[in-house]
Length: 87
Image 1: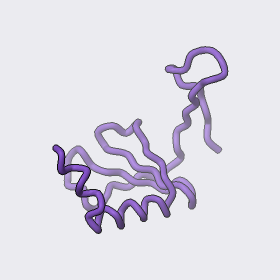
Image 2: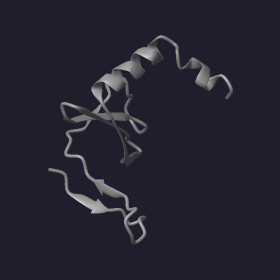
Image 3: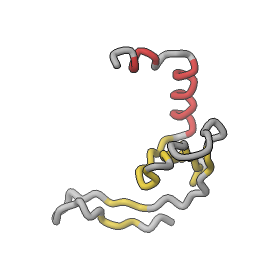
Image 4: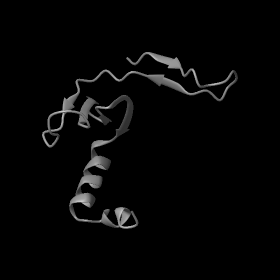
């Protein structure tokens, strides 16, 4: 069970943002080198994958295994390469 709390950035009223800490066992990616800037991944449930960058552990991206798989296959196939061409 997640312990939800109202974000300190939410104003009074009905349009509030609630946050919860994911109960997860974080693992460092085997592709991350020693030091900072490592990718951590966790699977707090069978339907949720959580990702975070070690330098900002409070910023967590959640997705489904299927969506993450689609993203990884697209990246491996080069479908996302055009996103960095303008830099």
